[in-house]
Amino acid sequence: MEIIIGLLIIAIGAFCQSSCYVPINKIKDWSWESYWIVQGLFAWLVLPFLGALLAVPTGHSLFELFTAEQSFNIWMTIFFGVLWGVGGLTFGLSMRYLGVALGQSIALGTCAGLGTIMGPVLLNIFFPEQDPLSKLTFSVILGVVVCLLGIAIIGVAGSMKSAGLSEEEKKAAVKDFNFPKGLAIALLAGFMSGCFNVGLTFGADINFGELTDPMFRTLPATFLVTLGGFVTNAIYCFYQNQKNKTWGDYANGKVWGNNLVFCALAGALWYSQFFGLSLGQSFFEKGGTMYVLSFCILMALNVVFSNVWGIILKEWKGCSNKTIAVLIAGIVVLIISTFLPTVIDSLSKS
Image (cartoon, rainbow, N blue to C red; front, top):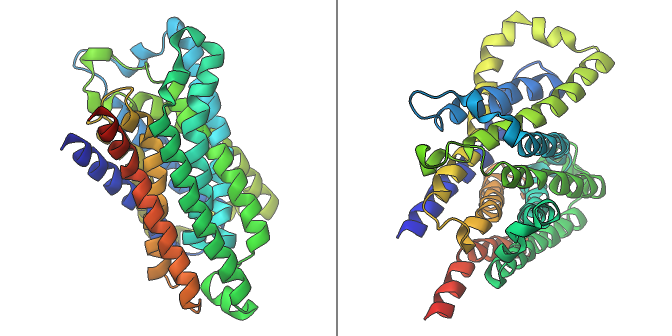
């Protein structure tokens, strides 16, 4: 029962994340770089910081965690956050060229697989005595493989969509649709976005241990990862402001109220995925299959819900029934990937 509760909490977070691009569509008269960094202010700084405070027991301070003994893990967590920031940038661009459904499917699918595998592999390089590779059990690997299979099927559906629609129909569904360009960007986004889970792996012990509620133990590490990502995104967005001469967006008082509300809502929805991940993980056995695979499960559910939004937003309008059938098959495989490892573990123990 606890596994089901954990999955439901992660699913709620995934649904919120997959919905974060809906309020962005309500932003008025701002360039991409302007609204991207403002929503990022909420998504990657304000809300993660407030979340991290939940991990601080009474009588203590968050800054007590940033000690010399933890300096290596802290800087590695931030460093992989910086790398993840590159993924965040290209992730946004993948939405531009592929749409919400297909862009998130390819990017998050790549992120799911690499994020799950890279953490233990890299940790094994620095701390082999901890035997982190032992966490990559058969059930975990199988879950990742099935997840990637689901992503591949959805990718086939995207290719069929690209081949089956006229240029006018593609533009009607996604204004700047460009499958080859979008595919390359989405794969890069997925590879770099996988660094988020690597950062969480290095920051796993940055908390107050038993004094911290298990639900909130990963939130300080989440804050450090998003802090690194914010730096990357801020540098790029301010560069684009300078290059495109869009600094005036921030001085446009007529739209500030509207845009600030929708940027804050988008940021809150985005952060909900990792807040939900922290809460959901507390219902899994630490170090167990579901705990190790939880990041992959989150990404898989993000893809499921993003495709639901893609259908609602009519991004698949005009596609053949065969294309839609392939898309649905991919979604079903992704859903199976979230439960399969638990079933395998249960059968192996019986």
